[in-house]
Image (cartoon, rainbow, N blue to C red; front, side, top):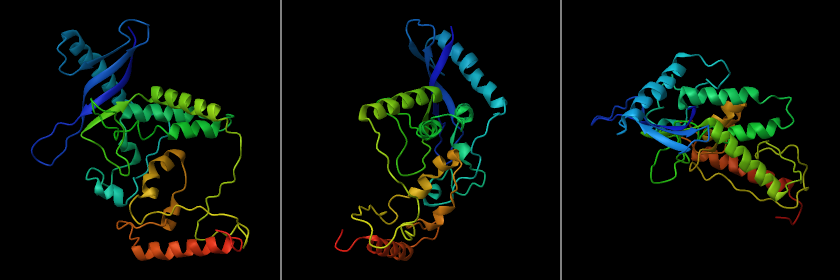
Length: 283
């Protein structure tokens, strides 16, 4: 009976010391592909059913071990994680020269994500849309996705946090579900209007002439509350984007030596630019 692992839960063995050990699989959710009953099920490392326990050890752990021995044949982001405020808060990442973006993933999920990425060809009509869908699942398919049996999982917002108990999501199921949701949403809302988007710095709106804008709505970064640049880093790594703009980010970040004075100076420049491009008497 062919089975498709839906997700795998990892639970770290802990002691009374502060040392953390590598996670080990303890539970597998699976789906039957032959239309059999029940369609879904689960197996655990200490399953009371001896047959399920035997399958867990021989097939589930065996498949993981088989994957671990192979080299991933496709590109994936192996660059070092950004050094910043959110990474130094995470004791698992802080101070480790070897911690790369790829270390946020199990090998099987890294392999699956890299395979999808490889097949999103630039020649495809919906290249950008498919990349958007891929980028929307790369965090939830990482080790940062929390396992909570009585609650919905998800990652901890606003930081990089690898929990003691992770739920390793099925990449293909995640991609299909996100694809379905996004395409349905676009069709439902009937989005056909176009917009002009610029990514230039708000401190230097050199492409906009004086006294030409009717209205400005701005949502400035609140000091160091949310580290937007750092939290974009994993997405940018998968998309192969240039991250040099981080030095121009208007933020307070002790790790990157960006002070409240830097923030105030750059915010002043941004407001001066807003004033320059606004038409007289406009807001």
